[in-house]
Structure formats: C-alpha cells, structure tokens
Length: 108
Length: 115
Image (tube, rainbow over all chains, first blue to last red; front, side):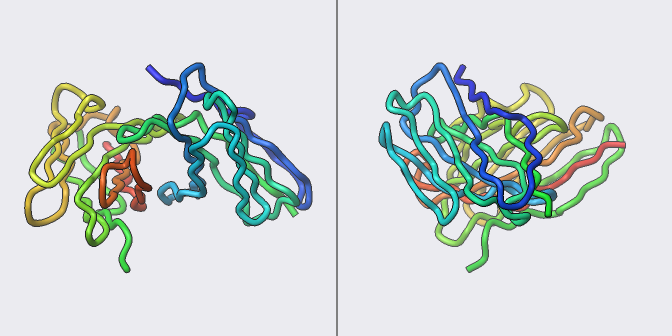
C-alpha cells in the first residue's frame, strides 16, 4: 500500500511569510499532484510533477519533485489570506492515493 | 463549460435508508472516479468506472455500496441501509482518458449525514 505523509499537519502564519509543505513516501510515484481544497468544496488541481528533480512554478507557489520521485514539496512565498486552505498531495495514476493533508491558515 | 456536477450537495438520511449520489462528468469525459472523505481523514479512493463498466472497485466496502455509470445519464453511487459511519463527503472526479495519463477534475461533493 502506497502512503503519503504530509508535514506539517497544521500551519498558521501571518500574511507575507514564506512556508514549505512536505509530502513524503517510501514508494516511488510516476507522478505527484498537488491540490488545494477549501471548506465545502472539492479539491482543485494546482500542479502535476512528473520528472524526478522537476521544479514547477505557479505565481508564488513553487513545487518540487524529489530526484527519487518519492517526495515533493510546495513552497509559498509571501503568503496571502487567499492561500488559506487544505493542501493535498496525491499520486498513483487511476487510483489516487491522497496525502494526509496540510491545513494552512494565513492571517492578516 | 460546466464542470463536474454532483447532486445533491447535502443529503440527510436516517439509519437504514438508502442514499443515491449522482455525478455528471464534464462534457466529453468518459472516466469517473469516486472518493470518500471521512471526518478527520483524508480522501480515499472508492471506485473507477467507464461507461457501463466498473474498472476498479478495490476501495468499495464489500457490502451495501454499489456504483454504476450507465450509457446515458450520470454515474450513481448507491449506499443501502446507511449507518452513521457512512456520514462523509463523497467526491466524484472525471477525466477524458484514464486519469494516469491526464488530469482529473473534481466535483464539489455530496455531504451525506446519517442521523
């Protein structure tokens, strides 16, 4: 069974701070996806990383896939209240395994 | 371009009743996936369907749960004789080809409460 552990589980920061969320597994994934989920809504795909060592940027968000394709990180620069939400990593193709989630709260 | 549509958004059932959750995939999408998000737990895969076929139901509980995706109409997740432990958010996702080769888009979910 493939497992994805995310850390930290909860993160509360002030607007303007930087943060990094980690997603780790003992299994190799052919690709990993990052989602953001807001209360009462479904997950929204942010990015898919495919190649080991790959770095993708989405405005203030930087995603990295580990060289061995077992881990990934999400770095947010100058966080804003609109970044508040549950961040989920997921992998596994047709049958996605989701990470444990990181609940981020950005306060003014 | 309508996204994945799920209905109802909220569903309340008494113990022992049946719950029917509907999912209309995005236009042109023939692959549908159901996931369940229990309180304080992550999203868990339940079942993967194509039109008229169940491809992978390894995440479905052995009893009371069934899913279908008919040639015409939405995909249905059916839960018979609901129990309090079935209370959760149920999400549907769809993709035009198998998800492993592309992105899947999620609906807003159906929140089932069993009282």
